[in-house]
Length: 387
Image 1 (cartoon, helix red, strand yellow):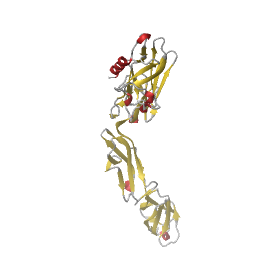
Image 2 (tube, one colour):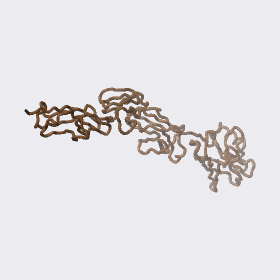
Image 3 (cartoon, rainbow, N blue to C red):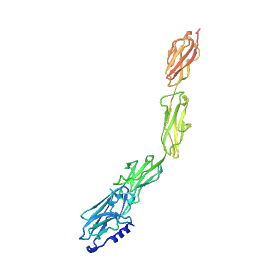
Image 4 (cartoon, rainbow, N blue to C red):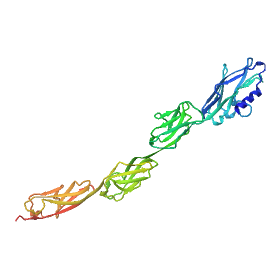
């Protein structure tokens, strides 16, 4: 309708008169496609019959009524500028274009002679477009993905891609397409594109999700620090995966011991010491954590005393009593007592009696001690007379 209206206006308003038919308006472009928010320039040249003086030029748009000066239209207030020079060049600068600016724009010339005026027909058709990213919403790790910067116009300027607001410089960009080869979880993010020279006019962001098996599986122990027998311990499994991991399996060594994101051991015992791992699983695979070591500390247990040499103990011989125990940390403090005495008779892992006599007969006991407690073990020593 814009071109047809321009023609109608021309035939209604132009009369060649005595000055001859030397009017012409030539536009550099008859169609412009611009990004929303950008600034466009419509340029051209004109001529007019000799003897006429141009007293007014302006740009107007076709709306179905008479062509009016854009600069006087409130819709274009502060957004339009007209330029002409002595060489009869003209241009329209239209800033911050929006979709409603899609019209055909014509250049109009007026002279002091009422009937000698001209509209350039056909005018310049403006189309306004926006960039948007066309891409899958989800891809699986290991696949390829192509993201395309789409527009209703044929834009030839170089395209710039952004991920999470930062320009991409290490990916393959060809024309308006971003190619992701062998997608990884690190490729997930918010992608947008822009045209070179108009980086401030980016597309709306497109969120790309990447499906991948569990990664970075780790186990934490609570409470932290030493684990003492009788206390309670909780192991927590953490992992990264898409979709999020919902299946967690716990192992002590190679033996399955539990399910769920956490594994609790109330009233922990020394037998619970060992290496624990968590296996995380989602729709795309599974992964096991590195092992964590649970080391249960406990006081001495199973304290026993042995006599060497075994058999009868005869006066004048020598014997050695040896104390054995189980504890964590290992027992290093051993103290020896003889029943009825108030003071220790010895210390250390073993206690030796040289040239034994009948007075050494009695019940001996060894006290084994570590940081978490003490326990006794006993043995009876009976010395027989040599005669």
